[in-house]
Length: 166
Image (cartoon, rainbow, N blue to C red; front, side, top):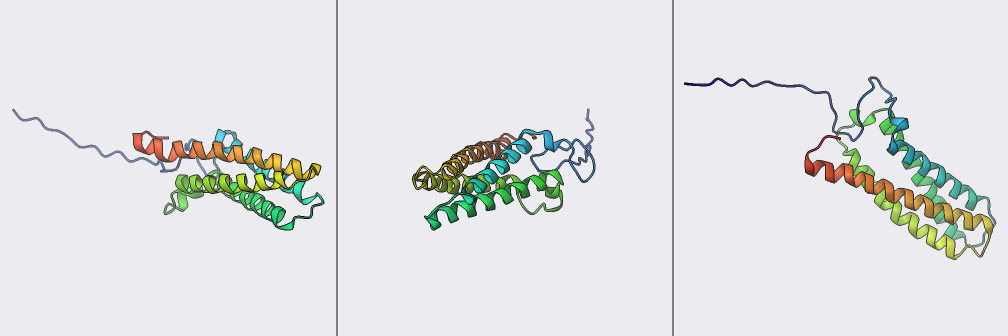
């Protein structure tokens, strides 16, 4: 007795991205309400507040606060770029980039540099209200980046090693 087995090919339209694809079209309408999107918006707002607090304060240690201003604005722009990549599904067009790994590296670098900048800004604030507030929002942004890094790590490495779909 011989048994015949048939092979069936199933085509899917899923991407390797960490974003679920539930709504068709250019814009992912479900993304703005997701936890990663809300986290990115909170990061961008905290970074903007930290920048504005330091920028509007009177300070004398130029190198310390210039560094803080540069990293807060640069990382705010990068967070908004990652938000746009997910919102407009740019990851579908640029498949040569591992977006989850890129986001993980962004968060790792951002966390370290923001922590350094916030510590130095807090130490050199000399009890000036705007500088203290800027460093506090810098620490809040550092915490939010750490949360983003942990979530990106889970998506990048834990999910891929277990073979589960995100």
